[in-house]
Length: 579
Image (cartoon, rainbow, N blue to C red; front, top):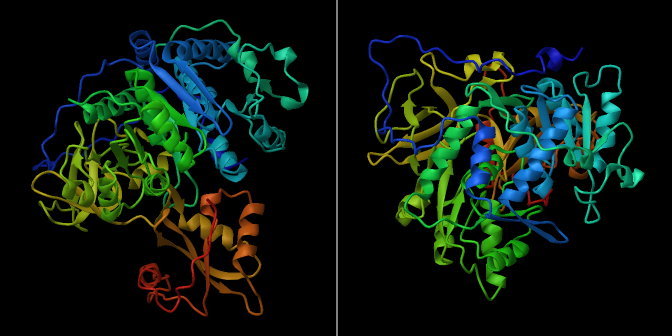
C-alpha cells in the first residue's frame, strides 16, 4: 500500500491544536494586535448562505478564451445548492474530501460553494498540476471524489483501476470541455457519450439534483485542505477549519475599510490559498468580480475597461505583463487603481513603475499555512508600498527570532514566526507539525525579515530552500530527485534564478555521468514524460565539472545562487522556458 493512503479519508474530527509550553516571560508580538473586523462565528456553509441572501444581485463575469459568461450571486448560489444535493445523493457527506481541479470557470465557483454547502472538505488542486502531483494529493488526502475536465478524467480513471491505485476515490465527476460544453440544465442522458469518459459521473447529473440546505458543521472542524510544495520533496497538505477560513475573509475585509467597494479582477488560479480567498470574498461579501480563466494581459486590459475594474491582485508576473500591455493600449489601465502584489519576491522598481502608470501597487506576505500575515494598502505612501510588505494584519502577531530562538527588536533581522486566527490547524501528515511550530506554538515561516518601529514588515530572505516561480512554490529537492532519475545525471542541484518576468525560475546545475551528454531539451522531455508540472521544469541548465561543497559534503547552494546573481562563470545566456 502507498504510504500516502495511511490517513483516513474522513476529516470530521476537530482540528489539532498546538499546545504552548508555559513560560515565565511570555513572548510578545513586535506589533500591537489590531482588532479583527466582525464576522459572524458561523461555519462556511452558513456564511455562503448569508452572502447570497444579502447580495443576490452582485454581478459576476467569467471570461474564457472564447466567450464571457455573466451571472449574479443569487443564481450561482442556487446552482451550487443543487450540486451540493447531487453530491449528497452520491453519498458524499460531512468530512468527506472532495477535490477540484478546474480553471476559473463558472463551474469552479459553483463546485467550491457546493462542497462547502454539503459540509464536505474542499480540496482545490492547481489546474496545471500533472498526474504525478495529482495522484499523490488524491492518495494522501484520501479524497472520495474529484471534479475535473473530461479530458483529464481518463488518466484518473486509469489510475483508480490500478491494483494499488486510489482506493478511497469513489466518484470522478467530469465537466465538459471547451465552448460547446452543455449547460447545467442539459439532461445527462442527452450529453454526447464521447464527452463523458466511461466510469465517470457527468456534471449535469449533479447540477440537476434538488437543492440542498446548508449543512451546519462545528467551527473547529476541517473545512479546507490545500497542498503546497515547500522544502520537502512531496506537496504538504495544509488543513484549515471553518473558523480559520472565516477569519481570513474578515482579515481581508479590513483592507477595504473606509474605501468604496471595488470591482475586482481575479488573476489567481484556483488551487492556491490566494485564489480561494478571492473567491470567498466574492461569495461571502458580495464583491463584484471578473474571473479570467487563462491569463492574457491584453485580454485583462479589455476586461478592466469593459467591466470598470478598479482593483486586482497577482504575482509580479501579472503586474509586469499588465503594465507592458497598457503601454501598447492607448487607453492605458483606465479605472484600475489598486493592485496587491505578492506570492513572490517583489522589486521596488515594479511598484514604482505601477505608480507612474496611475496604479497604487502594494506588497503583501503570507502562505498557505497563514494566508495573509501582512499587507500594504493603496493609502500607504509610495516608499512603504515599494520597500515593505505592509503592516501586520488585524488579529495576527509577528515575532522576529535569532538563530537561538531569542526575540529580536525593531529593525533587527531574524526568522519570522507568526500566530493569528486564520492560521492553519496543522498538516495532513501530522509528522510535519513537529518542525512547523516553535515550542510555544508560533508558526515558523522559514523566512527572514524585520519589523520597523511603525509596524511594517519587510521580508529580506528565505530560509526555506524553495523556488517561487509566478507565485508557485517549487521544491528544489523534488526537481533534483526527478532529475536524478535521468541516466545521464550523476548529481544535480536546483536553485532559484532571478527573473524579471516570473520573479524566479528553476536553474539546475548538473554533474553528468562520465561520457554522457545532456542538453536542456532533453531535460524538458524527461520532466514531461514523468508528468511533472510545467513550473517545476528547469529553464536553465548549467553543466559543471564539480559542485561547491561544505566539509561534510553538502552542496553550497548559496554559492550557486550568488554566481547566478553576479553573472559569474556559471552564468549562461537566458533560455526561454514554460509559460
